[in-house]
Length: 138
Image (cartoon, rainbow, N blue to C red; front, side, top):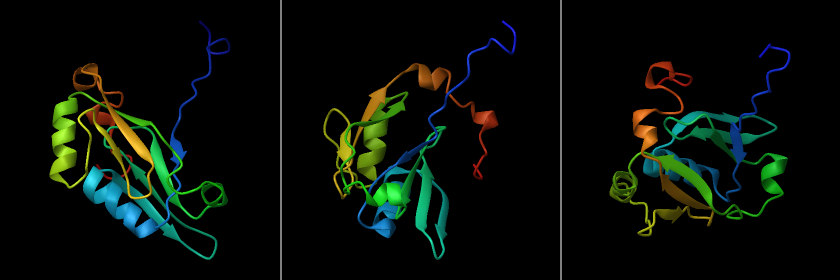
């Protein structure tokens, strides 16, 4: 297949997540869920943070951008995180104080909900190989 006829890759890299309290949301996702804080930008026009789950190519952005303030805090339901071992992931979350159901569903303080899906292949073949990570200091 030539370069001209190859299908375009479309990657989902940012999900806007509506929250009511930026600092509390940063603390929850960074300190309890274990996402990496990529940046927290504050200026005259915005106060936003970008956080990325370890091993993911997709980040969440929280803060006061117009697209965030148009959504009610807690209005996103069923976001999915994929892991190689769901039991170990649940243990990790609960050890950090995150309340999870037995089927690995949790929500943050505003009510945005997340599910943890087990894909054993992620342990054998991560989407982003460990040796190529490092985008934000890993």
